[in-house]
Every structure is written in structure tokens, then in C-alpha cells.
Image 1 (cartoon, helix red, strand yellow):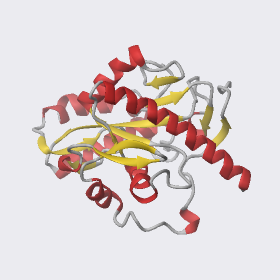
Image 2 (tube, helix red, strand yellow):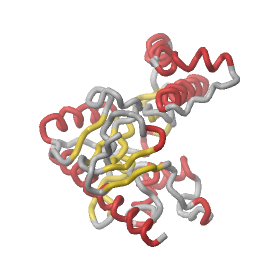
Image 3 (cartoon, helix red, strand yellow):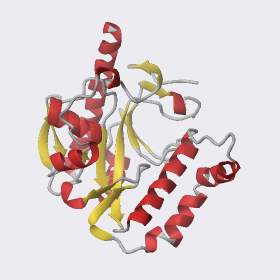
Image 4 (cartoon, helix red, strand yellow):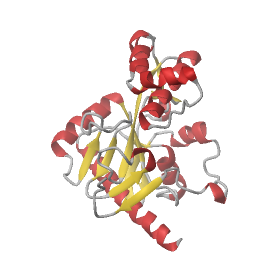
Length: 264
């Protein structure tokens, strides 16, 4: 257990290096980002990682993310790699990541993909959102179906309807049809935003607002202006530690290397 904890800590420190690089580029180019989800809890509750966490979450709106992509093309350190479906063709997920080259953090779901498997930071993207519960619900189901099909988590062994739908989700046929015919045409409410990188979660836009600096592992990073409201909305009493048996990583990791890239 002691060796496992030491390895986890070394992974966390590598993640901090990635976060510092992202923060540097964003500050230099006035790109707005926020720590989100478990990483925001870590900042508020621990001034660093949740002790058992092995990844980091950053969130940006679409405009700032697109600017970030352009900056990365020219200025991202060669130590790191912005992973998207465009930069890494066999990468199948909607969510972009910034990976650390010459490291390995191989998850069971993607172990057979010929991609960069380095230690990473997730980047979530928020968009404008309709103020319609049914549209929000369908959007969430379509996003989750697409993500599950492309990641291999979509099960349809005994369900003939799911068997028909799976390739349509995998090829993004349903997602594209939904966006083009319904979602993109639906009037958006600028007081709401939706996490469109696989979760379909809807939040009040006012939660994000002007970024606040907060300490995280000895560095200063940005969190949402109303980070406490954001976390309460999603988690409830986020200051309460979970039961001990729940204090585990949510990733299924099959291989970690702090100095070498993974080769199949």
C-alpha cells in the first residue's frame, strides 16, 4: 500500500506540471479556464488533490477552448501533447486531454488504442444551453450514448434495439443528426451552460463568471467565481469526506510509468 501511495503521489505531481503549463499559456493569452469537478473540490477542501485522485479536470467555454487549441499548435511545450480526435486519430473520446509525453497512464478502456497514453489533464467544454428540460435530457442521453459506444462501454448483448443503435452512436450519426436537426436550432438561454464533452450536465452560467485564484499543490490556479455554488449544485455537501471504501480512483489503470511511453 505504501508503494501504491507513493506512485499515486508521483502521478499527481506530474499532473501538476501539466496544469502549470496550461495555466501559463492561458495567462499569457488571456484564455479563461477554471478547475472543475473533483479538482475544484481538491482546491477548496484540500488546497491540492483529493488524496486518492489520479487526474485533474479543467473546464473552458467553447470560444476559449478554440483559442487554446490555436495557442497549443504554436506554443505548447514539446513535453506535452494536446490530444483530440484531430491530433491523435485513434483517440475515440469527445473530451480533449493534455498529455505528458514520455509517461504512461494506461486505462483498461483504451489499452488497445494506438494513441498517446501519457499522464493527463481532462479538458471539459461548456456551451450555451436551451432552457428546456426535455431537450437537456435527450442531449445528455445522446452524448452519453456516443461516448459509451466509442469507448467500448456500450453493452447491447441481449437488446436488439441497442445493437442497431450502437454503430450509429459510434459513427456519431445520431449525435450529428440530433445537433443539426434539433439542438443547434433550439433557442439557447444565456443564463445556462452545458458540459458538452460527454456528460451533458447543465449549470447556471453565473457559477463561472470572473475566475478566482485558489491555491492547489503550492501553485495558484483559477476556479469558478461561485465555486462553492457550482460544487454544491453537483455534489451536495462536497466538504463531507466519502466513506473510506469510496476513497478510491474511478479509473481502471493497467499500467503506469513515470518515464516511458506505453507501447502495445
